Image (tube, rainbow, N blue to C red; front, side):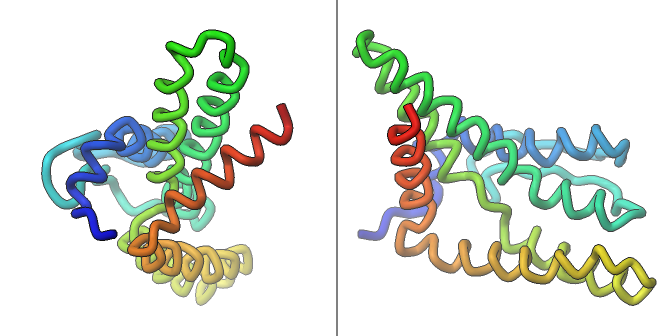
Length: 168
């Protein structure tokens, strides 16, 4: 079933916001100057963070994968709250929706993958061997973005929910 991306963005807007917060958080942690932030807007992309190019590879890496880290942690937290508050059925759907909106917006964009790939090449060429980890991460990001047309991001959310359910 095809649903336009802008409708998905509206339905999952909390996840879009936390996705951009993930980029911004790691910019702040590594003191990378941020020029402009849009946490949510009606358009493509639904949000963005414009920042200076980090000097070190690890900064680029964490700024690019920051949304995956932040949104995955938040999705697990929301699913945990939903399961723990099961006796209070009126709040459970809210936390399930928040969890899925965050899980579905966990994966960085194809643009992030391209930046990570190019910065990996650059830093590897400068002798930073840690930059080699950027290549497989870039590939996983590109694949996840390609698979989003068959609802990979939703399946990721379902997998997180199943994991949390089995642990709680």
